[in-house]
Image 1 (spheres, rainbow, N blue to C red):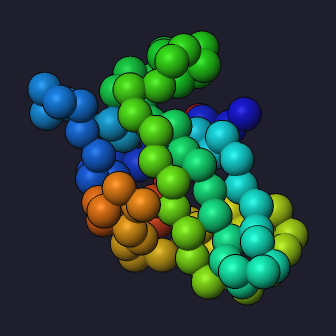
Image 2 (image 1 turned 45 degrees about the vertical axis):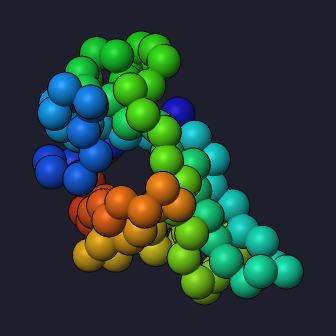
Length: 99
């Protein structure tokens, strides 16, 4: 699983620490709903992400389906200026750095 870094994603720990490291746990599409979606794992520490420890937080996002090809869906996800999680937070994953 690839690990990415993006400063100021918009998710924090309960103590207020930024969760700037993330992984895409699952990405796919639903033709019935015509939506693409991803389950994301967020980390405070780079080492924890790289070692695939239990994440500090997990979130799910959906967006209008444009493609059913996994690499294209990942590219789409990284193009949004902001995207809303199913928990109601607005986050940004635009142009992350792959570690």
